[in-house]
Image (tube, rainbow, N blue to C red):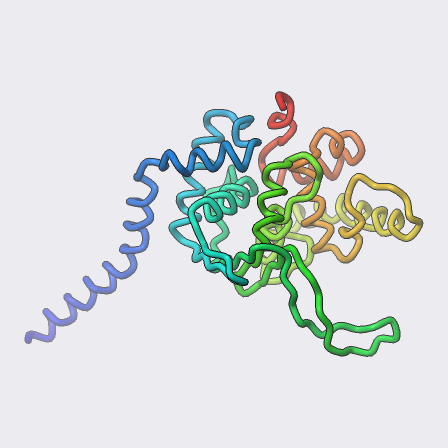
Length: 272
């Protein structure tokens, strides 16, 4: 065969290979949102009904993209189904409702029926590192994987006002990891944006540590005092589920998270 023709065919093959994923995604987004999926949102994610019409449409589109791009698998005997996939996808996409990308670094979601046990080296009070077991509701890996307990997912989605939501927590970690490391500072703007972020979150983090040390009550769960990454994830849960209280008690923190997530969840709770 003519080498020029071979070269041209090779370029065409490369172009098709690059365009094919975009074409498949475009086709997936054009498909109607199934009625069964809509029913899952109403049944399992009641906050969906409080979103504006435009926000509901955006959430449906993001949910379709999430389900098209991410791979789900069941573990611990759990059989995967659309209810699990849609509930997790829609809950996670609340975090990126006003964004164009849908967790681009995420590839896999593994779901257990309930709490799961991991074997993880950990240090004791003397600093000696040894094997240990931990029981978890969820876990986020920087390699693009999230692991969740389905009963905790469902409980958190249906009770969207107690400040505890394993999906919001673990997917906040995924956003945090987009910088290459989970350190409580997700992708922002330039250097000034990070300076402004630190100026708000650092003192809030240290205040929570002090609350935890002294045993004082705090709106933000004391688990957020573990490290800056956990603080960002726990603060995210509070922001979305208890926005009025956070805006009242942690005004600067609420404003920083509102700028980052580009939504004001107080509107979603006003009619609940």
